[in-house]
Length: 351
Image (tube, rainbow, N blue to C red; front, side, top):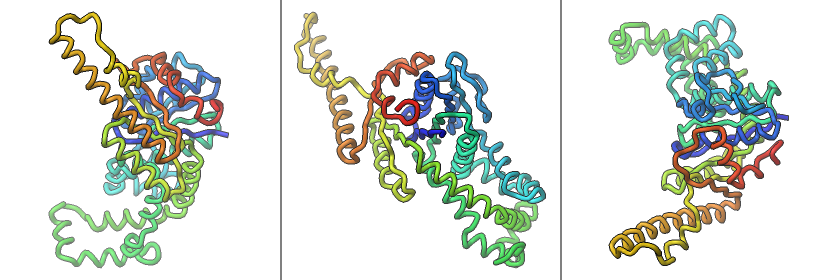
């Protein structure tokens, strides 16, 4: 059985690096591991030393059993169209400008494509563990909402009204052409705007049964996954972490653990109260003491935030210490996990 670990949280908290580090650590146990990034940036490729990371998994040199891939949204949606639409309908959708705009630019479309790709990799049974790095859009929450929202889009009342109660049902939307604003839109845009919209909506509805069934499968995979929320002690990531616990309940999904990234050593809190030795200049000693107290205050704030989250949600909270420079090699990535209690809490071969 393939285990899935989903790394989510606000943008900028180190999700991609954490996903790569977990993948390296799990692969070292002998488990066939895939790290799938949804982030359009190439940070995962940099962290794993892979150039031109693409939609198809590529082995990671220097780490046996580890592969990596990055979502290609356009390619994924083309595959979705070919899978759920009749050949002639698929051909029309792929060249329709409205479909292209949705598939290429809307965050929800990206998130649904990511879930679809994750499901495909799970069903190949080629991997023991799949580590998914979610997109920063919506703090990662869109990844969990996307299956239901896609089904709602294709089956929505507005779409049914526009396309008619039965397919092809084009009559209703064509009658709207009589409205002056829509006629003006056609003339300004210089094309048959309403015809394109109507064709798009009607063709989209033919995919409903397939997409609805697939969405339920993806939701099942999401509910059975091990969810790790990555955060820092900064206000925005903390706000997003609380938001996850508020909103994931509606999908019957409960996070399994929280990772506080870039934490300061707790011993700094006490170090600020110890006398300084070896600094004779009083001005320099005062400056150094003030600096120590500033860092001690930040370390204390982080410790309080960690304790508050752990107490509120009764969940495992793991820490990864701040380091500079950030991890740049496979050994650096592995050391992140080795120095954390997170590894022992992960499912599958690592448990």
